[in-house]
Length: 112
Length: 117
Image (spheres, one colour):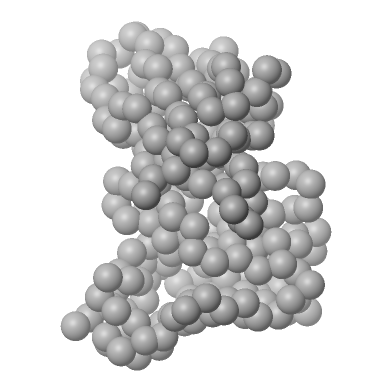
């Protein structure tokens, strides 16, 4: 049973436009969410996180929105750049467990 | 710059041999280190959690006698794949949890590509 789902395996956007990556979760005990970016044959790089006490967190071009009632979060990248092309993983953390549960990832391609 | 290193970055070995992968946190002390495995086009699957000085906690379905984890210090954890077989071929990634500045989160290593012939 997948507790963290990224239903879109891939997404393609034009440079300069907004990229929206979605993530759904089923475990209501998750209270901290993270987005990681991963290039092929490299480890994931931490991008941005959000606590369940917030509904929005912004860092430069990256904004994460959390809708607890819908158990849904999204990562917005604006404006998108070709260098943003990578696989993006959504991860969830249950308070005190220290274990991250990852989605399967969404491959983002930003076309020049 | 990198905050977690892994060595080697790739390794090819014969079936039946053992392979050791090192994971180091470079500029912080890691309270906990994690070992993940990733198959092509799949998510990262947590294999085990290790705390310095204590036995690792393995996830369900992961053979502890096959995947030996040693967390010798607050900056070093090793994963040894014993008697490796072709089905063990995968991308192994470690992460270290600790505090760097204001952030307390997991930082991932670059991964190790294991190919068992």
